[in-house]
Amino acid sequence: MAKKDAAVKPLTKSQILNSLTESSGIAKKDVQAVLESLTGLISESVGKNGPGAFTIPGLCKIVVKDKPARPARKHVWVPLVQEYRDIPHKPASKAVKVTPLKALKDMV
Image (tube, rainbow, N blue to C red; front, top):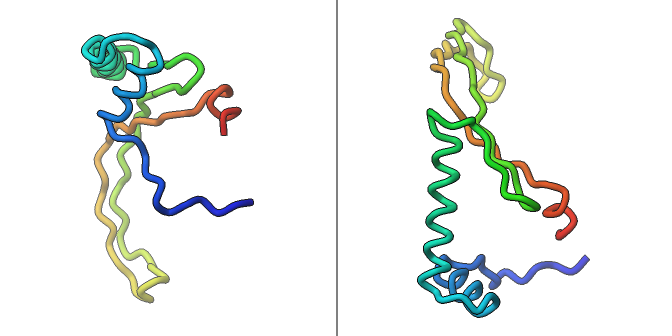
């Protein structure tokens, strides 16, 4: 397997817009409006009042997961530092999980 070139960097937002403009023949302003509306749709779907999931067909599924609170623990052995410590509690939180779909996995 060939080693990837270290100089290759991911595309910037403007490079993505230019590439989509050239490949689709649509005006750059229109492509930018579509991307902004897609961002708005995703934020509505994964927001507080949304269903908590959004799928981009053929690419990925975005889901909000609830992480429960973790209680505090007293006098826990921590092997890295070879001592006992008290671990504070962690409040409940929400995490965003992005799962690739089969079509995206097949691209790689």
